[in-house]
Image 1: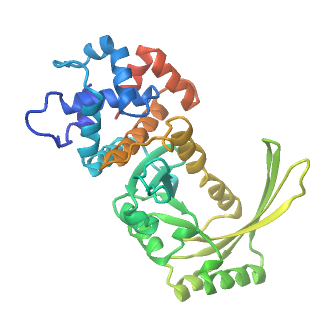
Image 2 (image 1 turned 90 degrees about the vertical axis):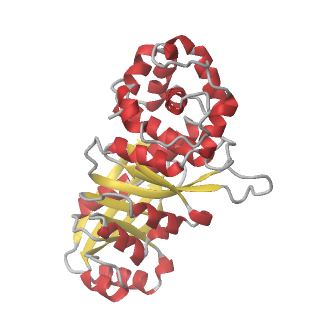
Image 3 (image 1 turned 60 degrees about the vertical axis):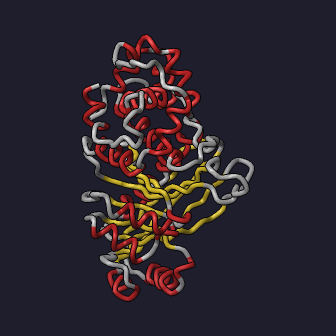
Length: 360
């Protein structure tokens, strides 16, 4: 509980002074329940009632287990920036280097009546090497680019390579990453017009570029072959306003199965750091860790897409709580899979307490 108080102790209670249940006790129960697989405020209460003896050995709970309404009111009113600050404070205990991925994610269940087509949209930052969520921000008016710029301004990116899809291939995004001492690797598509054509022409006419190739093992009946080319291109950065652009990379890939022929795919990237073609291939592949190890986990294991919580700050706060839970589970020794650790937290009190003790 000491580590928990160190991380969460600075949160301001948004409720009236006569609130019966202690804020930190409410958050402790919610986090422990999330580690064990609870997905919403109703399940937080069910978890607490089933683990009441364990919780009373740690917490005072003078007024018993908080109700569903108490959990709901707290998460609706709590400042989401404060909970994201807790998330960032947690990750400061780890050396964040290597690839950091930036990507948006819609909370598909978080929409008001009649607004199914415009659910809450979050921008997430993921450290691929440590497999930890670094930060999140709600995209204002579902503007992912604006949310990403606000998020990047709050991060220390020294020693990292920030990867992002073509939506974020913009001079202002590149400048924001470099301003925080990070390097960028941004996907480049035809919507960049002249820059895209210039990049293709430069690679086609390059002499002795860095080259590499690899084949992926068969997975889910699919095989893939990839070739990479990296060419110095500092002049393109100056001509098109991308700060510190030093190279252009291209990946040619062929994905095929036993029943379907290979389909070629070509992708271009802007780099602010000189990489060999082999290193470049690795970083491009690593970017997808945010989809496989964060977004997939949030949706499949934590039920984020299906969660109907949508009022006030509750969707953002529960999203931050899930990311804190993922980081705790990653830091806790035990089974390799997150799903297995969640089962241990659900069934084994000792494992659950050990996981909570791994907050730094």
